[in-house]
View 1 (cartoon, one colour):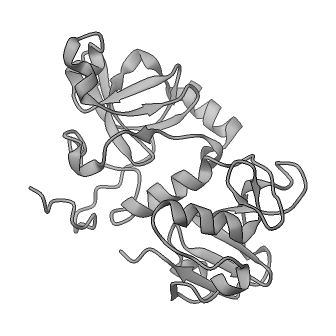
View 2 (cartoon, rainbow, N blue to C red; view 1 turned 90 degrees about the horizontal axis):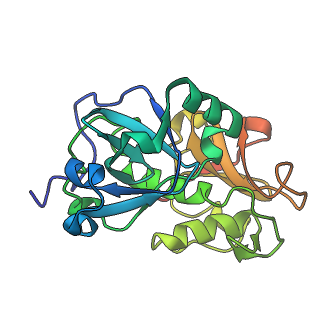
Amino acid sequence: NPAFDYTLTTTMDVTIEKEYAVADEDITIYDNRFYAAHPDKKEASDHKIGTLKKGGLAYITADGEETAVFIESGDVRGFVKNDQLITGKKARAVVKKKGEYNMTTASGVTTPDKNRAFYYSTASVFKAGTGKRNAVTAFALQFVGNKYVWGGTSLTKGCDCSGFIQSIYRHYGYSLPRTSAAQRHAGKNVGTSLKNALPGDIICYDGHVAMYLGDGKMVHASNHHPYPVGGIKVSGNPNYRKILTIRRIIND
């Protein structure tokens, strides 16, 4: 059905509790359980939909049969071998130590509409309607730890707060102003309360901007100090200073 994911919203309650899994090695994600369990088969490469680096984070959204399990990681959903994952208490310990929002997620090699396994399970750890938001925030989190450079726009070599926001959204085809002051007028105003904020929204302060992640957290290029004091980092308490406006760039 070409229209099945025209909108990712639904009237059904499909959000589930997070069951963490951590990649124990570099992993290939497949759209078929059989090829995940038998990656040596000749046709397996035709069913590859993504990759997850060792130490990367995934969520198990459907129990596996035989040797494969269905996972969700970033914007990728598919099958991987059970024995390639750290799960249970060990996985929760890794996530607690590293921080969920500091961990890398999967990279896709195809779009969800071409992934035959994308709706194998409708269960998700994310709220319906946030598919593109999840992609944007997951992409932003890949650069946590990189340095702050005033006036910079490079996600790898250094950027400032507004350069970070601008570059993240540019990757998804959105054109945003360069400065934090100008970004206060980008998109749609949703007020100043975090109760109205959704992942991907821009939190605007006097002289600073950050991207809201949800759950009271944000990712931003904070200052010139080395990470984790400065640089691109995840912070809690977005109300640490007065919020001037929250801007919505992605309209579901």
